[in-house]
Length: 492
Ligand code: ADP
Ligand code: MG
Ligand code: ZN
Image (cartoon, rainbow, N blue to C red; front, side):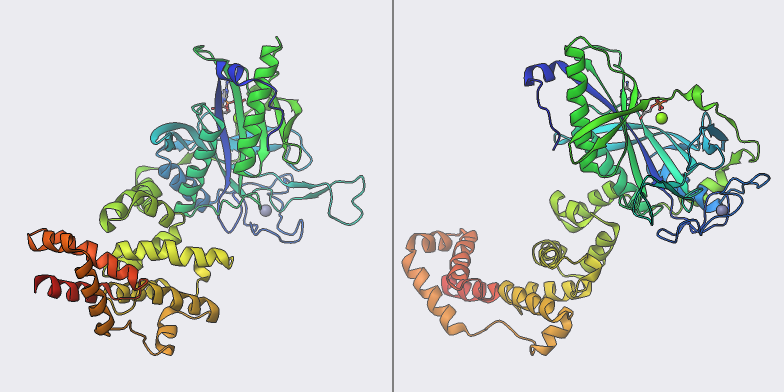
């Protein structure tokens, strides 16, 4: 948790936080952005390198077409305008993991600009602007521990040098740590849907720098910002921001000034530390990369990229709510991943009642998967199995209780629904009517008023009787059969 809640609520409320995020997303190309070295994660250090990514003199970069297409696809998914012409630029700085002494990035002419993401805020929507999305190469990795003889030494792994990144810079539009968390969640969801990155934070495929300032409410100008670098989970970004908000306010309240600097978040201590005073853009001596031509993504190429844009999560949720008559909550759970949404839809499209499929997936399938620590694609019950079972309940062949038992067997035996259903001899819920008839007779005798109302034309009263019989049978009875029996008796 973020620590030091030393500022009182009253004082916190006097200030408004302003937050802008810079997110680096590793693009899922097989080879690096300017050479043909592999981007595979976890290979032995310094095995995926060549003169280009090692920055040896005379080696020339050649742009990876796929990296451009992935970045442009992400940009389109984020509602950006993709520029016809963009320019690669050298960003000069010294760091041991940057062998060239500069990073090839984009500066004043980025690949894409003017996008946005809609986030959910207090039940409403809020647009968070995306300033730009540009392409750049990753640097290498310094290892300070975990290798042989690591005391007082640092080792460098240059496998990551030259891996393609899309940097996505937001406008300073967020006003709380929660909004930042929500933005990151939506951003990751969109990127995952496009398939251009796996957004795996543990492997560094998605990294976030959080910029934060505060200003007295009502003031127009922004305050001085600090930047929390490379936080490796969304929860920690939120905590780091909460910490920084309070720290800024504390400094200002005590008459101090915020130093514009980069800071590191220590999640164990729940606090940030100053790292270095922030470089200004001019410190990097940006200039156009002389070894690369301007990048031209013309209309035709843009159209081809746009054609591979999948339906995005929010649009998909809205369509699914309409198409299958499911709730917003259902749609939310069922679109958490594109794979889940695809599977749900293939099941729902073939089912007699899609709403029932949605309920089954959520109430019976996801719970059991979670209990066993399984992912959806490891489920013993396939979506075809879910459809089959949903239809069996729908037609009254099996009861809800029987379905639960069959699902338990599927998980015990690691077998799909159809196999278990067959192995159990295609069980059917009892159509033994005598006990149901008896229950119906008792109910009718005990509720003369309701019977009278029914016979006077209030046909919906049947629901009351069916409900009572179902309750008495502990959900085992076939609702359709119960309905038939009751109708006959009430009419007769
Ligand atoms: P820098 O050159 O320091 O990296 P940029 O103008 O490129 O600054 O902005 C980087 C990020 O910081 C962007 O996401 C932007 O929205 C955000 N940002 C800029 N000014 C502020 C501010 N005063 N408070 C909070 N965030 C800010
Ligand atoms: Mg920046
Ligand atoms: Zn290389």
